[in-house]
Length: 56
Image (cartoon, rainbow, N blue to C red; front, side):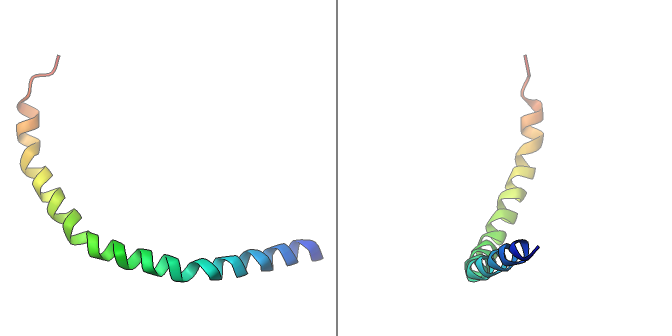
C-alpha cells in the first residue's frame, strides 16, 4: 500500500509539472477559436454546394 501511495504522489507531482504547459496550450486554443468559428461558417456556406455534386 505504501508503494502505491508513493507512486500516486509521484504521479501528482508530474502532473504539476505539466499544468503550466496545459495552461499555455489552452491560451493558444483560445486564440484559434475565432478562426475555427469563421472556418465553420465558411463550411456551412459550402455544404449545399457539396450536396449538389453527384455521387457515384
